[in-house]
Amino acid sequence: MKDQRSNCFSGSPSVNPFFFFVVAAAFAYVLIVYDCHPALVVTGVTKSEPSCDLFRGNWVRNESYPLYNASRCPFAEQGFNCLANGRNDTDYMKYQWKPEECDVPRFDPKEALEGLRGKRVVFVGDSLSRTQWESFICMLITGVDDQKSVYEINRNGITRQIRFLGVRFASFDLQVDFYRSVFLVMPGSRPRGAPKRVTWTLRLDEIDDINKKWIDSDVLVFNSGHWWCHEKLSRAGLYFNNSMQLGMPIPSAFRRGLETWASWVDANVNKTRTRVFFRTFESTHWSGVGGRSCEITLLPSKEMGGRDKSFVTDTVLDVLEKMKTRVIPLRVTPMGAYRSDGHAGRWSYEPAVPDCTHWCLPGVPEAWNEILFSFILSKTKTS
Ligand SMILES: *[C@@H]1O[C@H](CO)[C@@H](O)[C@H](O)[C@H]1NC(C)=O
Ligand SMILES: *[C@@H]1O[C@H](CO)[C@@H](O)[C@H](O)[C@H]1NC(C)=O
Ligand SMILES: *[C@@H]1O[C@H](CO)[C@@H](O)[C@H](O)[C@H]1NC(C)=O
Ligand SMILES: *[C@@H]1O[C@H](CO)[C@@H](O)[C@H](O)[C@H]1NC(C)=O
Ligand SMILES: *[C@@H]1O[C@H](CO)[C@@H](O)[C@H](O)[C@H]1NC(C)=O
Image 1 (tube, rainbow, N blue to C red):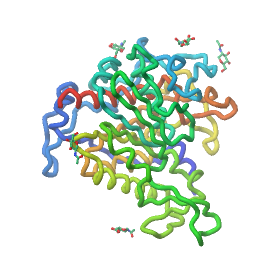
Image 2: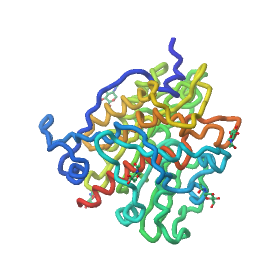
Image 3: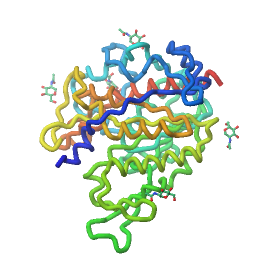
């Protein structure tokens, strides 16, 4: 029998070709910048398929990176600041993502801050979402003259369990929030009469109850995936339509949960105001027996080694395609697959607990954010 743990760490080997369709009108600026095809008519709706796929490309060394120093950014958590934790090689910070047929626009902090003036950006998901949130803030903060004007609104420090963090850029009336919701759907306590092995439940048909805090936003960036694995779910009773479904395969449970999230987006998000993104599975680099070893390389690997595939990514792309709301997939899985050099490894919280899931900051997450900024700022310019 296939070890389910492998779903958690390295993904399962099925691929779904995905076509990155977009609404032509909203995308006019991007069409120009990326030299894309004219609009196509697909199933009665006017959509277009950009000829430049931002997510297909490779990593090139560029001495102008990294974009910030984590030791000078109060919002980069200690466990991701690899240099401060003793990492002594720095090549991993010097790679830029280069799409095959175009360039990702260079991040300009002043332009980004102006473009986001008066806005609210919300990240929702697991710790990988927190990493992207930290990277996003650290990138922006390099454009702020008075660092004291940037603060966490409740004066909270960044911890791994905290459910909400909100960073305000006072001079720009900008807020960048993080909500921890690792499943996006609702976890709960052990129901009466549940089998003994069940210690908690996951309601696959109910969106996380903090969802109301997400709605009033201009940009919403979601992820989920790393908790949908056997180790995390083995003691959960999965609930769907008010009945407990024991033994439901994890990919089916993930799909149910994601469909719940998709219906919530379609019913609640203001399509005129809010741009919605979903990041696909962030590749991990566990290896060895049971996926327990973590070897960090000095340079990116030349091959993706199958790490570009994951049932999480396949499901995300499939569910997004069927939604009424246009949600832009941030397809980071193949990009990350090359980056065996980018993880926190032994330079995280505990040298004895190596980490081949999370990424060093600065490092790979800035590439996700440069792409994210290119989408966000293009909208700001056209409307
Ligand atoms: C980052 O900033 C810290 C503290 O100011 C400094 O000691 C360190 O040399 C800087 N690192 C790099 C790579 O510039
Ligand atoms: C860098 O760190 C590694 C251990 O993490 C050590 O083996 C190596 O000697 C160090 N290199 C330098 C130049 O300090
Ligand atoms: C490095 O990145 C900058 C900003 O994106 C770009 O202008 C420059 O051409 C890149 N250099 C190389 C050698 O690719
Ligand atoms: C769950 O309930 C919804 C609506 O109440 C229904 O459309 C759906 O078919 C049900 N699914 C299952 C597996 O019973
Ligand atoms: C949606 O957002 C637009 C633009 O901000 C606003 O004018 C409109 O009133 C909002 N609609 C709803 C239903 O809140």
